[in-house]
Amino acid sequence: MDPDAAGDDPCEPHGHPARDHRGDPGLPLGGPAEPKDAADIEAAHSDGRGLLADGGVSVSSLITGDAPVAFATMRAVGRAGRSPEGRRAFNRFVARPEGLARGLSRTVSEVVRERFQARRQVRQDMRPRVHRGWGFAGERSALNGVLRDSNTITVADAMLRGVRSVYFDYVDYDAVAHHAGIMRPESLDALVGLDRVLGQLQEVAALPPARTGSWCSPTTASRRGRCSPTGTARTSRRSSAG
Picture 1 (cartoon, rainbow, N blue to C red):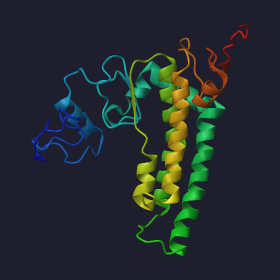
Picture 2: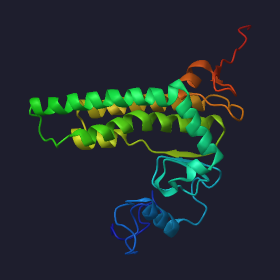
Picture 3: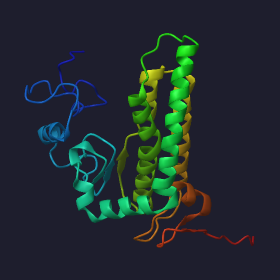
Picture 4: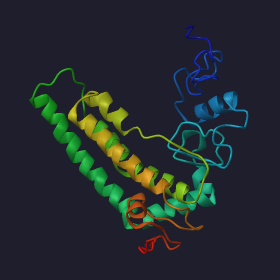
């Protein structure tokens, strides 16, 4: 296959918008480095009818897929704060105990775990290995802590509102595996954590859509039944008469 031929891959008929732009020397090769790059790449490839153009939501991605609502997406930096949905989601995440407070506690614990595991690699002389300093500890703690929780809550909120399509990207495993090794215990542990998150979202998908204005964490929603307009969970009761 010609690596310079766009569209040869049947799984990507139009090429990957963050990678396949070799014909334009003005665009960065390998993906966007800043919001302007992401905007240029999307403008060069989008026809306005992307995967999320039907009222979808883009969460933690590089480009929007023409979604009208985007959170933590490089192409749409600043857009979430200007939209009512973005302001509501951010305010609810910060205000509720299962939001920012839980994410921060997980962030701190991830820093401790990373420093312990990095020192263990050196102590046991595990090879190959790369340097794992405080910078990566901060990156890992943010990805596995606040960012994972905020993304999950945002996706669950969109699902409970009946949004037709949501694209989201979890990079926890990718970051940890890059520094620790793809089969090291900490990398596999990140996969287990992501598996739990996907299990929660699968349970949320089985719930009936909540009324406008509702919000709760995916853990609460899947455990208790659904969310009420006040943000607390409400249990759906079924008759046991048979």
